[in-house]
Image (cartoon, rainbow, N blue to C red; front, side, top):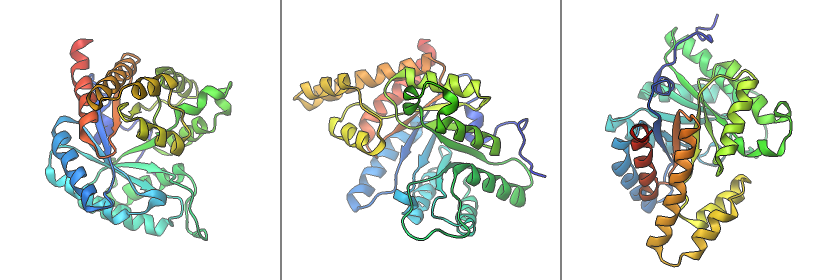
Length: 305
């Protein structure tokens, strides 16, 4: 019988979200070049001591797994904050995932983000997993076999942006997937990027109506770089509001553009915190300046409220 149950108290990062003050955290990704390594180091040097935890991504389709582990080890060695290691299951067999998870656990990781991952090219692994809830189930099984007690905090993805186009929340596939991931033993959710607070509140309210009770952290991106925002829209399919791009495009001076984007990002952070978000997770793109401005917003928010 599994050691996980609905009544188990949260541990790790999940436990932080039950405190009164909202958390602030950052996502970084494995570097692909020496310049990228320097950028990542600067980002960690500037932000690690100012946040509650750091998440580290996989590459596309689960590539760069070893590089991910190197970054995870680097952050853990700093000793300041927990590390949430991303895991993707599509295209990876259960045995390979067990080896990867075992290595992370050996390194001291106790916080994981279970993801389906990008479409996998090539023949399917006969031992492979197809959905994130299956990965959550596997992680809970490994936890039971290895520790025989609750030690892992397992996060999962949530996609609020598409709900506005679905009149009935029961018909929104991501909400049904979130429900399945919660039933499998997920502790918390991290949203994909969104730009309007109504997308977040509509999603969380609908999740509650479906019986999904886990805290949902608001995943946000700094609104300072119009080129990056347009590229993000291409990759995610989540449209960037025209009002945001219009403000950024009008500014020809880099400093004024940064200030304008920071003001818009600050407004969104304050809105999601006022709406009850238990935390804000910032997608940094391994750049510290714009994310650092928003970290400070979250840090002063409890006192301001």
